Image 1 (cartoon, rainbow, N blue to C red):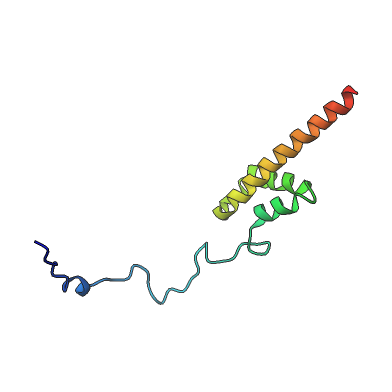
Image 2: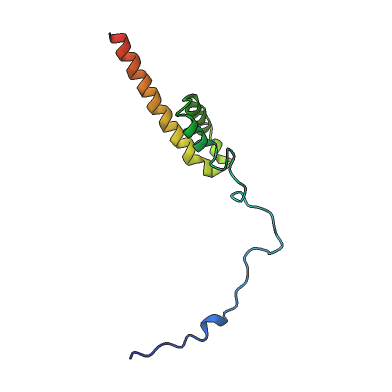
Length: 101
């Protein structure tokens, strides 16, 4: 009791690489995203606060499954779609209020 285990054999295991060392082809996630590295979806989301049409453009891309080219785009496109929905609801409420006066 209280004695340590013999750990001298742990560092002597033989490992083999899964990937070929000479295969230097970049993967799908190695290339940077367009629009300054943040992706088209997040770029549209941020620019949408200045020009809300960008939210609707990103929503169109989201609904046409643009994110299948690069799955990293999906979150930004979804955020833009939610922002476009909120913008649409705000415009609808303003129009209803204006017409009721």
